[in-house]
Structure formats: structure tokens, C-alpha cells
Length: 414
Image (cartoon, rainbow, N blue to C red; front, side, top):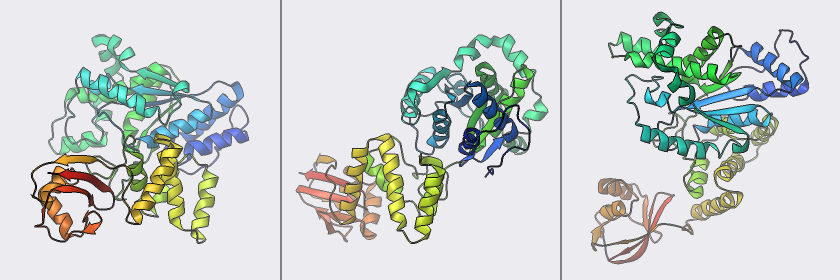
């Protein structure tokens, strides 16, 4: 992680306490800030002139929903927004049609215009849960990419060499492995870089996997006679397992639109060690507050109390303070063996039915065989009574089914 050290360069204006605070906020939790000296000069100039810096984040709407791992970069945007700078939430409706090759070992399939439009609307709505929409500039890169045309695209492509493009790690690996690389994939970093030219950005943010694309923006801005942007990369957030990157496909994620009770409980399930990285990357608490809290835990305070604070803060952000309080009460109730106040209510037929099949019909497991395994592992209850016979046939009636600690359903079986 980049250390927070003042620049040795002599800026045109003095480095004030406010500038030092802004630099510390910029560096908080980040992987790299490049070049740090140039960013400090931009901060100093902005402070002296009163002209806010332009902070850009581009996201391609490749899926309809985002999870809290995606909000790591959005949180950094919000911190810079609260310092008074102009943040630009750029929706890559044009670049989505190309497909970002970053971290890919195969060509990414392009999206249809209808998919892009739907996903873009959802992205903006969900991003507004983190950013202040009243102070956020929303842009779409089709504004300048479509008018560029074939002539402009050729002129843009002339500003970068194939040799330098092949320095990109994922291209190098695919070429060495004999995996096809389509020519249009070379256009993606060029178009993302051109976004920085069109927006005259001072800083572009992204995950660590975006470093090549972000540096492309610096290169092209210099080619077009602009002051190059600085780049800030944020680490990728590990999921609930504490090992793999947060991902829906790995089922280790916390969705920002999932119910408050589920969100709260999932956050409490992370390890005491992992909790501090989540504080750094997801909390809006100050660096000093988090450091003081960590000292208290090291001094004997129950780490669960700190984790509850984190879970309530995040749940409040995406729901409300009341929803976070209710989620905490629900969690404590379930920890004592209680049943949540609000659970799905279903009417099913086919009695008598095997317990595994019933759990599948109730949506509590993915398959009847998984239901049977959960019974064998001691993870299934009916009306609070532990079920140990995976061959059990359940008769008609109304009952509360429970799988694990968090899955419930009230079922009327006939």
C-alpha cells in the first residue's frame, strides 16, 4: 500500500493542513497513487485557486447489479467529493459494446444496446446510494465516442503502438498461450483513455486490474496537449470467505440491494482480521476513529462490538438507521434460536413429501440432495426441532422450516 508521505517537490503554492488532509484521504486504503508528486501539486493548486479537481470513475454496465465490493472505488469517490472536488460518474455505454479485456483469458462477448441501457439505469440508481447525486456529474462515453467516427478512430489508434499494447499482461498471456485476441480489443484501452481526454480529468480511479487502462488516459492526454491525469487504484475486496475476490459467481458477496437482515448477518460473519480491511475500504469513519477502535479491541474490547458497528453503518447506508437497528435485533433473536419477524410464507402441495424435496420446493436449498446433506449435517429444523432423518416424510400442516442460521420459510403444506 502506498505510504502517506509529503512530496519532496516544491509546489507553486504552500502545502496547507487542508491539502495534507486531502492527500491522506486520497491515500487511505489505496493500492497506488501515481504520480503522487503530481497529485499533490494538483491539490495545492486547487486549494489556492478554489477550482475543484475533476475526478473520473468509469464503469461499464456489464451486469444489472453491484455488490459492496464494487463500492470500494465509489467510496473513494465519495471521500474526494466531500473534499469539494467534482466527481464524474462515467457510464461506458460505448465501451460496453467493445468489452473490457482486463483480466480476461478470452474475448468478452459484447452486450446489446437494450442490455446496456437497462444496466446503466440500475448502475446509476445504485451508485447514488454512495455518491451524492446532487453533486455528481453523470456522463455517457457515447457522447464523444460515437461522433469520433472511422476517421477519428484511425487517428486515435495512431497514437499508440502494437508493441506497447502487447505489454499488457492479459494480452501477453493470451498471445503466448495461442488464445485468440480480436483487433477490436486493442480499441478498448484507447477508448477508455480517450474518455479522459474528453472529460479533461485530473484523476481517474479504478481497481488494480485497471492500471493499464488508467495509464492510457495519461498517455493520450499528453498526446492531445492536456495536463496528464493522475491515477489511483484501489485493492479488490475479498468476499465473505476472506480468500477469493468478492463475486456473485463464488457466492461470497453482499449485494447492496439485498434485504437489511441478510446484509447485516453476512457482514457479521466475516473474520475479526478481515474486518479491519473492510473498515478501511468501506467505512466512512475517519482514519483516526478506526485506529482508536482497533486499539480498543487490541486492549480487550470484544471485536464483535466493532463488527456490529461496521455492519450497522453499511446497512444504514443502503437501507436506513431503523432497518439497521431492526436487523441487529433480528440477528440477536436468531442467535438465541428465535424466528425472524418477517419470513417468506408459502403454500405447497404434495403431502406427504420427503424433507429434502420440501426444502427445495421452499427455496431453502438448490436441490433435494443438498437438502438431504443439510439434514445429515444437523442444519435443518422444523418448528425449532432439529431433524436428523433425511428420509423423513413431512405430512400436511403449517410449519416453519429452517436451514442453517439464516434461511427460514413458513410453509402450509397440503
